[in-house]
Each structure stands twice: as structure tokens, then as C-alpha cells.
Amino acid sequence: MSNAKLMTPLFYQGNFNTDGKKMRAILVREVSNGTDTYRLWRRDGKPDRQYPQGEGDDYILYVELHGYLASLRTTDFYLIDRCGFPSAVTALYGDEDQRAQYFDGLRWSGGDEAVLEALKREEDKIQELGRDPAHQADYIKAILDKHVFTYRAAKQNGGETFPDFVGALMLGELLECRELSAIYQGKSREREQKRRAKAVAEDQAYCEEHNRLAEEQVQDAIRTIREGGVLQNDTVEFYRSRHDSSACSIVLCLMRRYQVEVPLRTQGWINNKLAAATIADGRCSHLRFWGHKRDRASRRFVDCMNKLTRAVLAEQENVCGTPGPPPP
Picture 1: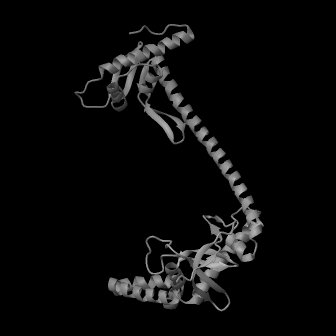
Picture 2: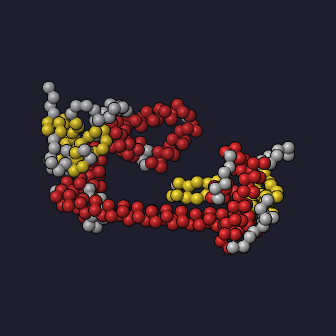
Picture 3: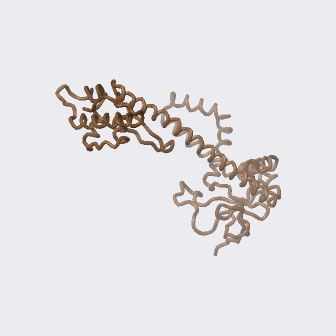
């Protein structure tokens, strides 16, 4: 027959248990160091952990405090290890540095077999000392003291930092903690709103600056077409957001801007092969492209480039009212 009792957890579904909902819990044991005494509980029924690492690793432990159960966020398996390891280190070696020196020397003198044997002795000592109720009580008290420190800090700064409900429970100030938590959540939302607004502004400024530089590239390329010269087929990149941009060769960018139809195969050649195009007398007079000596330039590209040149010069004529070089 189960010896479970209905107990009140401090938190329910991740939030403070405002309605005082109950859960079935089983008393695991009571631990004491002579000054501090704690009753440890676990949930009744289905284990908390699906894949336990060893005996006692299936249920999360709770400590009973002023009528509530507060989670220790550890299982019995890990409680023993965390309590026993520091005590075992002190008992066997003195401190962490001496432990490291001991094992370094053991690797040289005794090899892996000696190291494994020493680790087995250490594990036995961890289990022995970690199961000591006094060591467990000391460990739990240290945890609870940290909760109290966190709550007092939040109380002192008026909710700027997280108000710890476990610490408030220790001091009998749950009502004050609830009020402080509401203030903290409001301030957290305000900080988050400011952070997001700042991120949006920074993202916009980033995009504007990079798009300005990209547009300068485009205008320089248009100027080269109008005045004649070597148009380098550099990559130009425009940003919709900091992490959302589109990049292509500047020649292909201009062809799209001036609505010059370019076959898909020719687009690929422009992006992957074209290095530069020389513009003279209103037409494409020379090309440089990547490839083997026997490779030929794309004739379709030359046609498209000449159409682009005519479109750029026609635009200049419409704006300035002065004719450019004769079309090819």
C-alpha cells in the first residue's frame, strides 16, 4: 500500500502555485547536520526521468519548507555524487590541485590500471561520504542560502533582478515575492521591448549602410557604361534585413534593373565566367572571362550587353536631353 501524501508544491507547471494545487508525494528520508534538518520527498507514480543513469536517478527530490515542497532540481543519484565528491577529495588528497597532481604522477608511475584502481577507491569514498545525512544537509543548506541571497538582492534593488520564490519561502515572504515578481516581469518586458527596438534600429541602419554602398557600386557601373571604360563584374549585394540579402554580379544586376531579358544559361555564364567588359562607342568592345584558352565568349551575352548599354544611354538622353553615342 502506498504511503503517499498530498503535498503542496511551490511551483505548478513552471509557475508559482497560486491556487495551492496538491501532488501525491512520498517521503524519502530526513537528513540533518545537527543544526539544520530537512525532509526530502519525491513525486509518487511515474518516474521523472525516462533514462536514469543509476540507482536513485529516476525521481527529482523535493525539500519540505514551511508547508511547501521546493524542488532541489537533482535526483538522489546526483545528490550523493555532489555531496560526496568534495568531501572525498578532502579526505583522500587534500584539495583539487593535490588530486590533479596525484593522478598525474599515477599515470606516469602506474599507468591506466593504477588510475582506474584509484578512481574506484575514490568512487567508493564518494558513495560513503555522499550518503552521510550531515553532508547532504550541509549541501541542501548551501543551496537554500543561495536562494535567499538571490531573493534579498531582488528585494533590495526593487525587482531589477529575479525574485527567488524559494528564498522568499525561506524567509516567510511569499506575498512580498509575488508583488516583486510582478514588478520584475514588467521591467523584464520593458527591457525586452527596448532590446528589440534597438535591434530593429541597428538592423535597419546596417541594411541602409550596406545598401548605400551597393547602390554606389551600381551607379559607378552605370557611369562606366555611359562614359566608356572597363566594367568590372564585381558582386553586388542588397539587404532586406541583416540576415536576409541577395547577391549577384553587377552586370546581371544592371540587366535586371533595365529589364534586359537574359536567358538562364547566359545568366549563369555572367555570374560564373565573366570578369569584365569594356564599353566603347556605346557598345561592348572587349570581354575578359574565366576559362580555357579555347573557350569562346557568349555571343548571347554580347547582345544582352549591347541592349543594356543602349538602355543606359537612352535613360541619360531622356534625363539630360542630350544624345549619347550612336547605338550599335
